[in-house]
Amino acid sequence: MHEIVASTSTARPPDWAVKQRDLFDAMATAVDRFVADYLDADGEPLWPPDGHVGVDGFDDVVEGFYNWPLLYAMGGDERVLSHARDAYEGALRRGSRTPTPFGHAMVVDEFEQCRDWFHMGEGNLYTYNMGLAAPDDEAVVERAERFANLYTASAEVNNFDDDRKLVRGPMSGSMGPDYCDFSAYEHHPYGADYRWARHGLPWRDLEFEEAADLLDPENEERLFEVLNERCAKGDIPLNLNVTSLMTNAYLHTGDDRYSEWVVDYLEAWRERTRENDGIIPDNVGRSGEIGEYTDGSWYGGYYGWSWGGWHYIGIGPTVAAENAVLLEGDREYLEFPRSQLDTLIEQGIEVSEDDVHDTLYIPHKYGGEGDYHYDASGVLTEDDGEVLWRDGWYEFQPHEDDPYAVHLWYASMDQEDRDRVRDLRDWGKRDWKQVDMRASSKHGAGSEYAWLAYLDGEFPDYPERILDANRAHMQERLDLMRDEGNEPTTTDEDYLRDRNPVFHRGLLQLTMGAPQPVYYGGLVMAQVRYFDPGRERPGLPTGVAALVSRVDDDGIDLTLVNTGGQDQELVVQAGAYGEHEFTKIRYDGEETRPGANGVTVSVPSGARITLSADLDRFVNDPTYALPWT
Image (cartoon, rainbow, N blue to C red; front, side, top):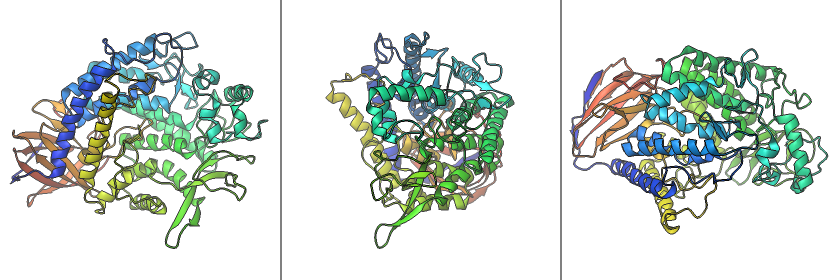
C-alpha cells in the first residue's frame, strides 16, 4: 500500500478539527450516561412493557441506538460499539418475549415477524452499520446471511417468488408475508385519523364522501376491511429496500447469488415500470399483474402514490439503484429513479410568488377523480379550497431538500443531476447557507443542501456550524435527561429514539464526504473511509480529524489534522467498501499514482496534510473486509 507522510506542522489546529474530535469524545460519554439511565438492569429497553401485545414499534426501539456503530466506524470510542451490541441484544430478547395477536412473538429468530419495509428499513440500519463497525464479528456475519436468506427462493417462509421476481406481500419477515391484518397494525394505538385521514382517501371509489368521515369508528373498521382486501398481498415499491439486506450479505461474503438477486429484482421493477408507460406502479399482485387487487389500477397500493406519494415511492428505486451501482459498477441503473423524478418535475406548475422569485410546485401524489377536501397544508388548492388535482396528479408543493435527488447525483456524479439538485433548491424560498440549530428529526434532515453549498464554495463556515449544531443537539438530549431526573417520564416505543444523544450527520459529511443514507433502508455511500492499523479497527485514529472539502466527478480534496499528542498512522480507503480507486494524489507539491483503493498516511502530532485525489469510481468489488485481512 502506497505510503504518504504529512510534513506540514501547524501551531494551532483549525477550529473544525478541534470541534470534530471533541464531538467524538462528548458523544461517547453521552452514550455511557444514556445506557446507565435508559436501559434496565439487564441491559434491555424498557419498552415493550410486560403484558404488551402488538406488532408495531420494534424498529423504533432499535432507532434509539442504530447509529452508534456508525459513530464507532468513523472513529468513536470502542465503548460505543460495546454499548450498541448490548442494547441490540437486549432489544432482541425483549422483542422475542413480546406477543402479537397472531400467536407468535414480535421478533422471531432475531428478525421482525411481519412488517413493511418502511419500518423494516429503519430497523435494519443497525444491521448495516454493524457491517462497517465489526465486519470480523462472526455473529454480525451470520445474521447478515440469515436475514438475507429469508428472501431467497429456498426460504421456507415464502417471502419471495423467484419465478416472478416479486416479494409476496407489502409486509413480510421471519414469519412470511401472510400475517398482514390492518386492523391489528393500524387500529391500536393510532387509528385511521393518524395514518389516513390526514392524507386524504387512498381511493375515490368507496362510499365515504370526505376523509373526515374516517374518524367515525364504524367507517374506520370499513377502511381496515378495504385495506385487507386491496393492500395485504402482492409487491410494492418499498420492497426494493430488501436489496440492502442482500447487498449487506454480499459485502460480508462476496457470494454472487446476493448480487444477482439485487439486479434481478431491480430489473423486474423496471419492467413493470416500462409496462406502465414509464411510471412505477405502486401495487403488483402475486400473479405479477399490476393492479390485481385494485381493479386494475396502478395506484392505490400501500405506501403508494395515493397515500404517502413520492416521499415513500422514491425510497425503493433510489436505494435499489444505489445498491446495483455499488455491486455492478454500472451507473445506468440510476436511470430508474432519475426517470421518476423527471416525470414529477415535468408535471410541475411554476408560480410567481413575488417580483423576483418563481417557485415550481411539483406533484407528490397521483389518484383518481373525486373528493380532495382534506388537510394538506402548503400545497396548491382550487379557489374553493379543494386540493388541486390535474390529470391525476395532486399535492403540488415545493420539492425542497429532496434526499433522492441528492443521492442520484452522489452516485452518478453527473453534471445534469447536480444541476437538478440546484434547481430544486433554488425553486424554494429557504436560505440554504445556514444550519438549523434545533435538534433535528430522527432522519437528521435539513442540512443536505447546506452541505452541498459548502462543497460549491458558497458556505465556507459550514464545517464549524454543523459541528456546533450537532453538539447543541446532543446537549439538548442531555438536558432532557437531567430535567427528568435521568429516568424517562414516558416509555413508549419512541422513548429511546427521542433521547438518543448521537447525531452523526455532520461527522459523516465532513469525514467521509457522504450524505445521510436514505433513512428508510439505504446503505452508507461515501467517498472515503478510514482504518486505524495500530489498533486494527475501523475509524480515524485517536486525535486525528478529517475534512472532505471537494466532491466532484474528478475526485475529492481531503485534509487530515492530528490534534493529539501522539504520532498516528491511518489507512485511507477509496469508498466505504473499497469500491473506488485512487488514480492520482497530489499533496505538498508532490504527486503519486497509487492505482489502488487505499493508501497509508502518517500524520505526526501537530501535523496536517491535504490530499487532492482523483478517483475512478465503482471499479472494485465492494467489501466490508478490513484492509489487513
